[in-house]
Every structure is written in C-alpha cells, then in structure tokens.
View (tube, rainbow, N blue to C red):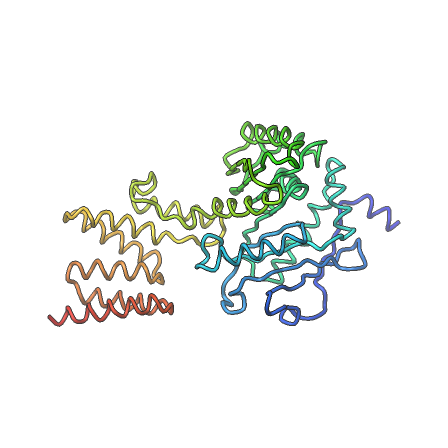
Length: 394
C-alpha cells in the first residue's frame, strides 16, 4: 500500500537537515566549504551538497547573500576561484555569493535527472529543488532569496528545462553549450507555449555556445532554441544569447559564467549617466528605477545613491544658479532616501561647502564619517571635515 501511494502521488519529500555536526564544526576554515545534508523519503541516506561560503560570511553576520547552484560537482573549484577573484574588489562585478554544488554520482539525483530528460511531464527533480534543496539552503544559510542556476552541456539543458517549467525557482539561468538534441527534457517542444505564458517577476537568461567540434551536433538545436526564445519570450524574460566561436569546448562554462555575471549584475553596478533616458526624467524617476530593481528584479536593496549624485553633479557643473539649486535639491533627496549612506552625506556636505554654508557642511561630513569604518573613506572624510572647520574660522 505504501509503495502504491508513493507511485501514485507526486514526489513527496520530507526534508530534514542532518542532526550531525553544526555548521561551524563542518566548515573547512581554509576553503570555506561545508556540507548540506538533505534527506528525502526516497533514500535512506541524505544527499550531501557542497556549500562554499563567501569570505565575509562569518565576519559580516548581518549580511545576506545570493545563491548560485550547479549540478556538476567539479564546477565547485572553478566557480569558487572565479567568484573569489571577481568579488574580492568590493562585490564587483560578482556580488559575494553562496555557491552550492551537487554530489558526484548520487543515484537518486541521477535517476531524477534521467526522468526529467526522458519522461515528458515528470517533475521529481523540480519538486526536490522546490520542496527540498532550496528551502534547506535558505534555512541553513543567510541567503537573500536571489538564486542563480548555472550549468554546462546536459546540466545547461536541465537549466532551460527548469526555466520553462518552474521559472520561479531561480532568478537567473546561465546555460553554456546546452544539450537539446533528441528531445532532451522536451525543452524544444515545450518552450514555445511555456515561454509565451511566462509571468511574474523578471527572470534573466544567458545562453551561449561555440563552434567547437564537440558542439557541432548541438548547433542546429541551439539555433532552434534561440529562435523559439526570440519569437515567444515575454518581457518577463531578459535574455542574452552569445556565440563564443573560435574558443575551446572546455572553456565554455568559464566564459558563460563570467559574461553571465557581468550582464546579470550590470544595472546593480553601473551608475546611470545624467543624460540617460531615466535620468533625463529627473531624480524621482531614478528612485523609481532603483525601487524596481530592488523589489522586482533582485529582491534586495540596490541603492540609487551614486546615480542621484551623478545627476546632481551634472546640474552643478552647469555653473548657473538654477543648476546649483537643482543640485542641492537632489543631494538633499539622496540623503533623505539613504540617510545612512556616507557617500550621499559627503556629497551634500561638499555642496554646502561650495555655498560657504560651513555649519551644514560640517554636520553632514560628520555624518559621512559616522557611517563608514573603511580606512580610505574615514581618512578622506576626516581631511574634508578639518578643511570645513578651518574655513569656518576664516
């Protein structure tokens, strides 16, 4: 009877985290690797995923992080190395991220992947990710809800399969040299209808391939998938498709991850130019744009501070009384919107100093100093504060 129920019902997953060592005990202090054990009703043994934590994880205990997941166990090494290099310079261009990779040769996962590939409509793999793996990550680690699915060849095909069948599982999908031929996971057949019906919060897709010998038999299906995306994707899906022709096959996941990260987080890092379409509409339009990024695209705050400062500086540089007044209004709006931003407070202080309002300049430069402990900024703001005080006495 129990077996019949298991066969008749959708995948039922009873998730518990292993009751073994604590996270701190499991952590390899040098590599920052830990193990997440996810137990399901279909296996006597837990499925053990490798989790690589960002360098600041135990230092910045109030910080929450995006998550990247990859089915290939060997991807951990190159993702960790790329992430370490691309995030160490102030989260730029890769925001510090929790990286999760699957175990090698796990039979349960292998069976679910095979069913997803061979049996149209089978959802056991998707159910496991939705009901088991992703909640376990969020429960055990300080994730911020933003998730990236990364994959190469067959795992890239499964990335597209996940995107079209459960787009809400991840916010972004990087798929390098996806396998799509021979009705792989029925992606080609199912994509037109499901992409056209996609709704909800924005999703990002970076899909790439090359003309290497190993990818030749996938190029026709890649071109077909590219056309399907272009013909059927709704505005919900922000997609980028690229050919890395002339490059090596095993280089593809490295290239796709690097390009994907830059494109995905570009509007997080890039300051809006004063003459951009958004900035030309004024500071309120800038705030609305960053509200959209924060609440819809990313789900965590993307500050508008630098773009507001850039617009204010452009107004000030006009050298007119009207421009100066507009600039001051924008600086005040930036401080009102982000009172704990040291850069906003500093910009406002400088604007007041230009108008020889040194009491206000000193007040806001002190607030800038109070809101950072970074040596570069504390030194810069201390010098500015001393200069403002000296000028007040003249």
